[in-house]
Image 1 (spheres, rainbow, N blue to C red):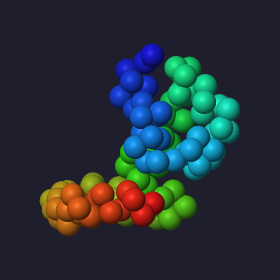
Image 2: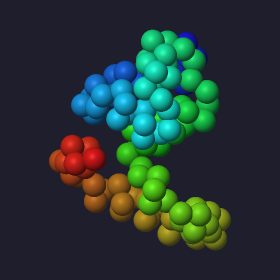
Image 3: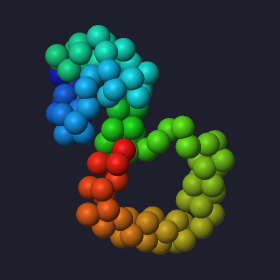
Length: 107
């Protein structure tokens, strides 16, 4: 297994989220049978691995992300780095551990 694949064990993540294979893999556009092969050790293509991380580890709802969101982030990072870091810190601090657990359960 590649380092990235070991970093994100899909079966472990799926079990922690309490999802079946069809639900878990369907959220990132992979069939249940394809997901089963990845859980059995088949190497995941990098795009699938990145989607798994975004959707199931970082808990990002891709249907809510728009191109403009990335444009704003790029602008803030390049033109207002101090503001970007402050906002990032504040956003992380506002998500208490209890809130993170509640978010995972609600998703």
